[in-house]
Amino acid sequence: MHRAAVAAPVRGYDEQLWTQVKAGIHYLVLQVVPVHLSVDHQFLISDSLADPFAVAAVLLWASLLVLTWQTRARDRLPLFLLLWWGVALAPASLVPLNVLVNEHRLYLSTGAAALALGSCWTRIDLGGSARRWSPVLAAVGLIILVGLTLQRSRVWASDYALWSDAATKAPMMARPYIFLAEAHARDGHDPEAIRAYEEAVRRDPGFAVGYARIGELLLRSGEGTRARAVLETGLARAGDTVELWTQLAELFRAEERWPECTLALERAVGLSPEDAGLRNNLGNAYQMIGRGHEALAQHAQADRLAPGDPRTWLNTGNAHLMLGEYPRAEEAFRRAVSLDPGFAPAWISLGAVLERAGKRQEALAAYQQGAAVDPAWGAHAAEHLRALDSTPEAGPPGPRIGAER
Image (cartoon, rainbow, N blue to C red; front, side, top):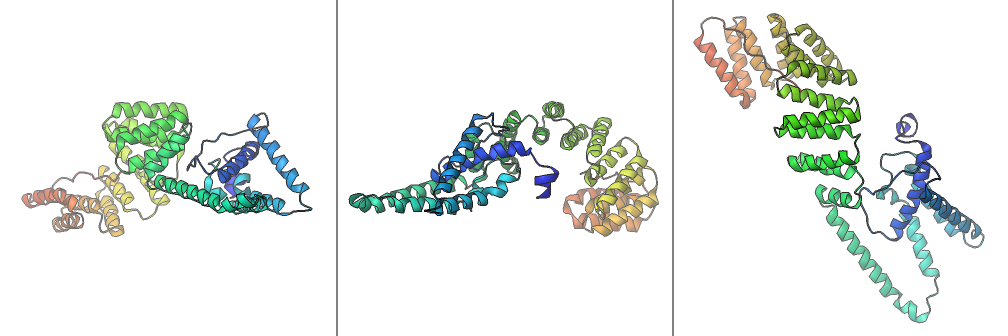
């Protein structure tokens, strides 16, 4: 609450005031005529009374307040209901929130609106013949509302239906396309996810994460050149953003362009120095360009930020291994398997350094343990075991197995 209202509000209170004055009229319309419902309404910010819609809203609210105040002597219900309605909406209206209008904010105020409509119905003198038809009119109204409810239930049946409906009803809004893209990406529909993210960044060119997600999906689809162009466009439009630099580093890593990968990760770490995963990745990149001591410094920072992560100790062991510090590498690998006995890559790396030290039986046990805890590493372990069985002397150190994240 403090962050949203004081420390880092998403918009100024002048914009909040005039926008929510308009939003109140929008809410009234939705409660009286509940059609064109959407999980994300198309609604624009007003920043002053220079907006004619804000002026009209202020005048309408002023008239409602005057009328209810003038009737308070003979009937206090209208003023009471208007105050109930306003107080129920006050928290979401006074505090700047990301979403300008949202239907669920109406739940508490709907009680006041329902009592107001019911009060009007009972106070209208319909006459004898018209009153006989009032149950029929009420039944027709109920049927219409049931139909609207069933229609909205079908829309809420899936992510795709919900956000496609919102995108159709709010063609200027980026948010529906963002959630639609995330649903497609979650289910492995990469081309559809890319198209939806493209629609989102077209509507919001400053949406940096969108460019990063497009780049990630394009890289996953084997379109590295196109992915790089999208990421560079994102950096030009959205400025320094950790997600963009991280994804650009991943692209360079996939292309084995380690100097560029290292530079991109350095930018990402500079933007998010408390991210242990980024620190580990930068350390691994330093290893690939032969900067072992700098790699160790990054892995030490990762362990400080996220203590007890076995992947950090595997990476630390690999850095010691490349520097020829085999006892310290063995110590790091042992720490990794003690933290997670089911971490197969650490067992394989431990076996390699034990083999290098001439500890054949311990190396054999480590390889076997790696294959046992994770069958996916069985072939890798079997290769080392065959080499160990056929070589009477201590062999060269095995390949480093990184845990890039």
